Length: 180
Image 1 (tube, rainbow, N blue to C red):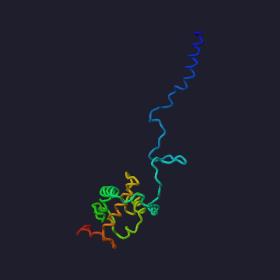
Image 2 (tube, rainbow, N blue to C red):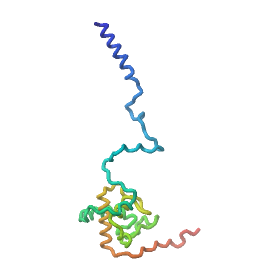
Image 3 (spheres, rainbow, N blue to C red):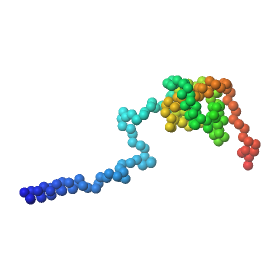
Image 4 (cartoon, one colour):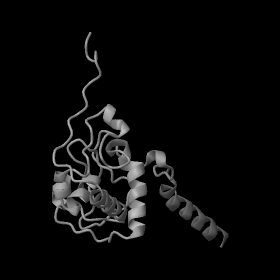
């Protein structure tokens, strides 16, 4: 009986030995990883990321979108707060251009300009989301609703501002600027 027990123990140790090898790790150092110069792994087929929204290539693809959020007092208040935080540095507090960033970069357009007024709500939403010619994308940290609130605020600026038919000329450089 004793030898059978000893034989069973020896057999169990012999069978367990391959399982006790140290070629598998539980720490993150030895996991498969993607190096900075490698492309990320492709998404699995038919997968949908959490919080997914429809994907558009550019603002041109959003032109036909309709504003799903009415311009309520709450929407306009939120849009105004977001505008002051995100848009005013370029477009100015009133949305008429000439924000402080305009001293260093091409000036942002006056949002009351007739060509901006002619754009659809979807195009303006797409411009905020995906950027424009000189405007970087501004969607990071903003929900789709936040971006529609910004569209509502832009429309409020246009509603309360006189129509600008000719864009203003860029300011003249100060005297002596650019001379050696």
